[in-house]
Image (cartoon, rainbow, N blue to C red; front, side, top):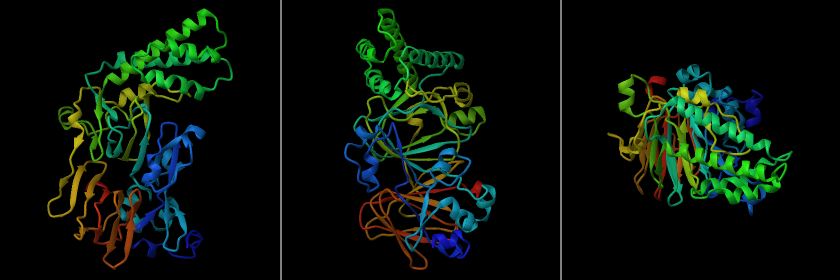
Amino acid sequence: MADQIMAGGRSAEALVRGLVKLRSNNLVERPWGGLRMLDYKGCAPLPDQKKLTGLGVGEAFETAACSSDPESDQHPSVACLPDGSEILLPALLRCAGREILGQTVFEKFHGEIPLLPKTLDIEELLSVQAHPPGDTELYIIIDAEPGASIRLGFRHNIDRDALRRELVSGRQEQERLLTLLREPVDQNELQDILAPALAARGDDMSTTAAAMAPLLKDTSKSTSTHVAESLRRLKATYWHVLDLMNEITVKPGQIFYNATPERVCKARGVSASAEVHALGNPQRREILMLEIRRPGVTYRAWDNVRFPIREIDIDQTLTTLHLGATNPTEFERTAEALPGSPGVFRSVAGDCFVVDHIRPAKNTPVSIAGGHFHTLHAIKGSVTIVDNRGNTTQIDRGASAIAPATLDKYRVESDETAELIKVSLPRSLV
């Protein structure tokens, strides 16, 4: 079927009158990733995977079909067709984009999906980040180790110039450290040595400096002293930057909307944007979350002394960020019952996306009004979707699907405790 669609010998329009299921194992390994994702997705981990590869499963691109986003373009979602064949989602959109997205969305976004829901499995601290003005993010915590936390928003008002000087100095110190190492230097080995010591707040780095001796160009006392001093300066910057941000402990079921607080938007006359954030924590307490955002660039201001060194853009990030103080409670959200829609709870209705939580009670289906493009993500239990033609589609935990604009009213059923996340575009965009 997929081959026939690609060859133009079979119309794709008939296939998008019901749900379009997506392959659930669109997984990407990352050095900061964990392994909880595999159980969540129903996949079996390789024995000693992280020990063998150094990589965990960091991301699953749930609904990716946007060529202007480098990651989405590199990891497009795959649609599963009724006969068992598969087709890349961007290719399906080229054949039936108007039917899937609706005419208005198709034209406004050039036949691409203007959303990028991802499942993240975060075992290590991610970089200090920002996004373009007007872009916000939502984090739905699916699972988390006790005590796991994220950094979100600045705790105090920030002096832009002072922070810039510190970040520039930190990056220069990191680059200087590399010049002291023998070539070719294995930066992954260096990361394995440094990461635990940086995370241990009370460690004075003396033992770590000694452990680096086999990596040095020479083992003279002056070089060893220089390395020890460099590590102490880097660690001081590492923790100072983290301490500038709110540390928020997370638990399964919590919802965090990363957006400029409403009080700030009103006072400054601006739209909400994502605040500074560094997901994960130095203690490596793992977090599994559904992240909902627009496709688009991610700016890194600081990479927490990570090796191998990755590109950062300090000036662009600081220009983008709101540098005022925030309170952790300003990011917490509760999914509130949606009037007139039993079983549907809304957590966010923003300028970028609208997020509803569908929670069917046992033997009590939830009715959903269709007729518009949206994505569906099962984060708990298994649900059955029954459309107005009587067609049924099962979505298990960890799986996603697209409800095309051609799909009319449908109902969501489950015989267990289940939750299905519905992500749609605000009316201003459709």
